[in-house]
Image 1 (tube, rainbow over the protein chains, first blue to last red):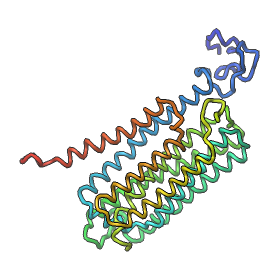
Image 2: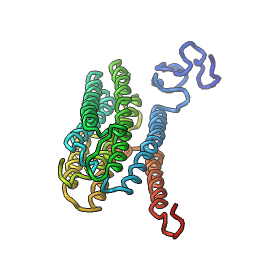
Image 3: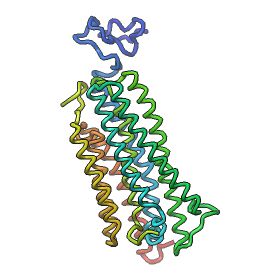
Image 4: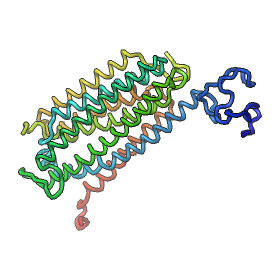
Length: 248
Length: 103
């Protein structure tokens, strides 16, 4: 059980392996440790910094993950700009704009959820902001489902049943392949985000977060805002490139 | 105002201002898209999208108050994305410039 650190004489006691000196002012240190401080970190600030940085490294891989699809979009749109504009014109700008606003509101409530933990707000307040974020996230997915159903109905799903009456059927099918890949991957991230927020809400309900320790909310927030940023680019690139031709 | 683990706590008014700017940006994007400005449509829409993304990264994602290491890591992701786009498109767009090289 002993981790061999001379500065932690109580490390051999039961329950003192990972969180030595938890809250005990008489463990040889000048001040008590926070129970959430893991033994390989100097202090809470260093621990929070390491987690945030780790999340950013993950988000860089996410940027490259979505980046490949944006690259494909760029190349195929370069090959057939008119075809993409024509295909884009069949997306519903109103639903797309509403979903953009819904996601931005959910980012605001997410930022407020992190802030409520940072300021040691009551568990009910923290859970309230997280729940609001989840409601808006679910609303986004609901609208996305309506749009997808509409595309199935109008034979705009790439495959044997794809049907296009315009001038550029092949470019349109490429556009809708990218539309479903990009919004599908984005929607998958939203679904995962809702799962993460459920876990974070339960932790918040159990009063795990306050001004001293709120890293899980902070890191979950980084993920949520990243998914919002992806949509900020998807909305103009998918919905608006043929908008000036007039609605169909 | 700073919480006890060293993180900056932003005032609610700042978050509301960022939210307002994101809303204005969204409306502006739709308005711009309504007019046929040629290539300028793409430039304007993507500029607004980049500005919105920057606001989210700096304030909602707290990079504004982050360490330099966070700045470097966050920036590197977007930098690598630019390399992906630039090198791929410079290859693709320049194919056939030298006669006999286009396959």
